[in-house]
Each structure stands twice: as structure tokens, then as C-alpha cells.
Image (cartoon, rainbow, N blue to C red; front, top):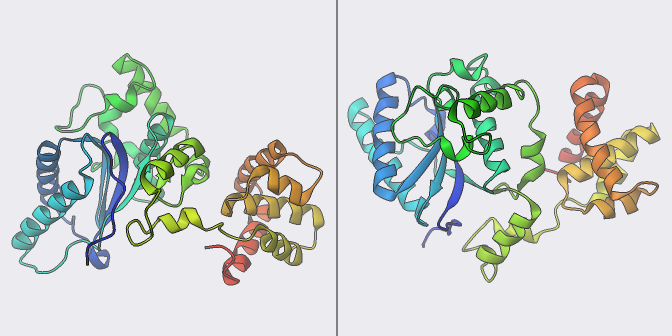
Amino acid sequence: MSRPLRIEFPGAYYSIIQKSNGSEKIFKENEDAEIFFEYLRNTIIRYDIRLHGFLIFPDAYLLLMETVDANLSRAMHYLNTAFTMKYNARHKREGHLFRGRYQSIIIQPGDFLCYISRKSHLEPVERGLAAHPEEYALSSYRYYVYPEIKFQGLTVDAILNYFDKDRVAASAMYKRFVESAIGKKDITYEKNLHGGIILGSQDFVEWMKKSFMQGKDESEIPVIKKFQTPGPDPHRIKETVEQEISDRRLARKIGMYLIRKYSQHKLKDIAKMYGKTSDAGVSQLFYRTEREIQENSSLNDNVQKAEKLLKTLHLIE
């Protein structure tokens, strides 16, 4: 039985995450990382891949890649297979090194490429592996913020050019862009990640569906199901939150926030469900609540309590 298809096309941008088998720490030594980089460079040359970012963790690696040709699966198979064979021989081990197939997110070029780059470079900080992205050695961040140093095979201009055409100015602006988000929740990422596989605007999602999912079924592209189902029932979310939280104003606020966060319901439909607001009002409430959650521990506790109940009832994932 053949494996399900991945969505691939020329010029596509991907965020790739590959985890180790059983959370095994495979990058225990610097030499292991250097060997991986050697095979990564070979992959870039062999399959005409453009590398826009990387992170190496003890039990996983993350890559930001662009495929000139529609060949991501072949490139990743080569990289993982070649590195596994070398790693197993070096460490006198057998069996699979990586956990199943890699996870990939297709990224809309432009702003979303910049946002995923920032999120990736902040991962070591989020994981508690470094206090600042510059402190993490196995990352492409330093090559973005210091124009004088280079990493063979890494392309930084595609992202930096969105900030400024001057390399030095662009690096300084990118550095400020990344550091401004340290310790903050990435609202842009959460709001624009669709089906767990596409990061971009609704127009980009519609283009993807029309171009690559039309006429296909779940056996070919399993993630199609995420775009075919309506998602959580907003009315049940509303009812559950109102039963859990006695304060009517607070229940309204949290209910609208969670429906916007977890369902595919349109803004105008959420506004109609609650009344006395507009689609713009729902959008403003969502972002305002996102900010307040970071600053108001009581609101944060109530939101978490509601989310826990909704998950217990299998209304959200």
C-alpha cells in the first residue's frame, strides 16, 4: 500500500519538524550535528533545495526550506536515510533513528515566512534551552543578525529582504523583530495556522484547496478531512461556557473568544449568535482577550477552566 501523498509544488516554502524515535537524544555530541549538516548540505545540492533556517535540538531538528522543484518527500527521505545509516554505524546501533514521517507546514511567502522564521528562532528560548536566541549555538539565528558570518548552504536574503534591501540594516531590523516577541504568545501563528498544515491567509488556503485538494480524498491526502469537517460546534461551546461560568459578561467574553479560537465559524456568524456586536467587534474582542490573558491571572484561570471542560467533553482538541 502506497503512502498518502503530501502537498508539493515548485516554489513551496515549508517548516519541517523531524523528531527522534522514542525521544532519543541523538544529537549528543557536536560531531553528530556536524555530520547532519554535511548530509543537509548534500541534500540541498542534490535536490536543489533552498535552506532558510535550521535548529538542532537533542531529540529533533527543524528546517525552513523552499523547494525549487516539487520534490520535498524525496529530499527528506534521502536526508533521513543517509544520516541514519551514518549515525547507526558511528554509534554501533540499529533500527529507526527518527519517529515516523516528518511534520510539515506549508507557508505563504511574505509576512508569514518572516513570522515562522521568528517563531523558529525563538524555540530554544521557549523550550528553556537558552535565555536568548543568540545563546543557542545550533541555530541559524546568528547568521541572520550578524552579516559578517556565513553558514554554507543557508540563504538569509529571502527573509531579510522583506525588512530592508541593505543587508546591515535588514539584520538589525530582523533582530529587533525577533527579540520583540521573546516571552510573548505568538497570536499571528495561532490565528493563521489552518488544519495544522497551512500557515497563511484565508485566500492562500482557498488557493491551496482549489489547486491541490480538489478531486482528492482522505486516502490520498489525509489532512483534507480537517478542511472538510466544520470543526467544533460553536453552539455547544457557548452553552458549556455559560453553564461553567456564572458571570454572564465573563461567560460571553470567554465563549466568543474560544469559539473564534477553536472553530471555523465566521466572524459574522459568531456576532449573530451573541448579538449586540459586529464581526469587527468579535475580532477586536479576540485580540483584546489574548492580551488580557497574559496580564490577568484570574481571566487566564477562567479560560483554562473552560478549555479543560470543553476538552473533557471532547468539544475541542
